[in-house]
Length: 112
Length: 113
Image (cartoon, chains in turn yellow, cyan):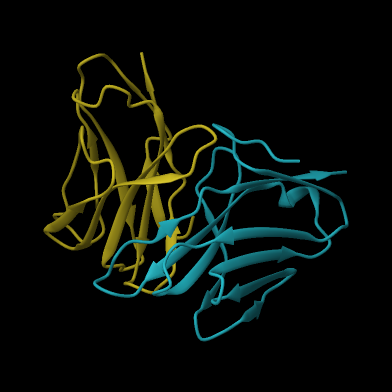
């Protein structure tokens, strides 16, 4: 898991509720990423940020929002607009393009 | 054997045998490749990487081979152990404009004791 932490490990969401997943890294990496993983599937990119105060949509950004106010933090909010949020969410970071990307331990989101 | 559809391709090997996991990458402009191992309920773990100016790179019990002609990447695990059972992903990086890694679909490795 390197120096990337994600919390909580498990998160429960009620209908119509927004929830925020935390991702923190102490690797001094510039770029951070959020992925969604469904059972038996690969990784799909939600959002990424290459520098503080800037971020770009990935392949499945609808129903999610992010912020990057600090270099070490990249929280992901799963909004009520995301109708199928149950999945395993992975945060990653890298020093830059062409550098190794390291992953956090993941957060499993479940809907009540 | 293999399974398709919603399930990942699966490779079953006997403990002690060598494993070869293959990956076809998508972009001829990719210049950096990584293999990850993901155990159930955990984040992907870096195994080994290779840059496009190399054809082969070796680590501890693992070797990555890169064939740029046919855009093919393989991961070889020597003397496979039960602890090697996991899903393995390849990823490619196109070094232009800081684009994110592109991940393959993954292969599940099952080690038979």
